Amino acid sequence: MAKTPIGLEPVVGSLTSSKKREYRVTNRLQEGKRPLYAVVYNFIDSRYFNVFATVGGNRVTVYQCLEGGVIAVLQSYVDEDKDESFYTVSWACNVDGTPFVVAAGINGIIRVIDASNEKIHKSFVGHGDSINEIRTQPLKPSLIVSASKDESVRLWNVHTGICILIFAGAGGHRNEVLSVDFHPSDIYRIASCGMDNTVKIWSMKEFWTYVEKSFTWTDLPSKFPTKYVQFPVFLASIHSNYVDCNRWLGDFILSKSVDNEIVLWEPKMKEQSAGEGTADILQKYPVPECDIWFIKFSCDFHYNSAAIGNREGKIFVWELQSSPPVLIARLSHTQSKSPIRQTATSFDGSTILCCCEDGTIWRWDAVPTN
Image (cartoon, rainbow, N blue to C red; front, side, top):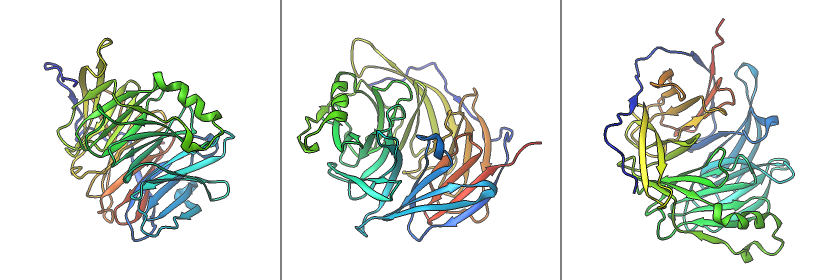
């Protein structure tokens, strides 16, 4: 278990710091009555950087952000099971470059939707309970990871439909896994967090031959020799409550719990002993009224900023790469009162989307400076 050393005081950002960027609401859509739990831009394919997807109830909707605040509906997929409630969505692609929208939720089934024809490419069954988050490997976008209530993380190949690895067991999470993320440059590494209050870092390095094998496998996916990864390489108790969102920032990790802040910390591994090490807490980004779980933040493509909503319908935009942290903007609108479940920050950070408990999508655009 990583111990947090005493003596290194984290730098806490000020909520009263000068506003660096002005944003205004350019659109508000009421998608339906059911809560929207996820919104995500397609950063996988440069042709579609302005395309995003949302999920709510049994529906996946694909939109495009156009000039002048316009949001155009491109596609909509309704699951055959009307009781499905999708919690997460991610963009991936087939080996030939076809864009996929991957969604999952309460049923624990991963739907891989081919965005070129709006049909289901594959459905993955394997998790024993609902799925809280799916993320795509940016360096190999036909690999996805899923985090589940069944206390496991699974690695899948969307091209072949194979479950390659299951991160669970003796050293695994002891409660629901709420969030998972691929390291941006180290292809072997993922981080996961959840209701056991921990963040775990896992390595796929010694199992990489199975990942490669998953691309050339021709037999039934069920015959693939799926491997269990039972022990993380690092375990940290940064938070004292549920950890519902974690993202890599280079080799550092941004994570948040239900205590009104995002924390930036550095895992320091001990080479000899797996799982051992220390965690240096570097910075804290306060987010008032962010004390309910399942609120996720988002970053622009280059991780310059993070945007996060709260339970009162407000958004806080933090500059990530400055010390002390600088609050770029605090966004509020008289009609935005519903909890914001997730934000999506555009490629360059100039547009911020959010999806809300009341079924609305809001679009904020940066006001150009003269």
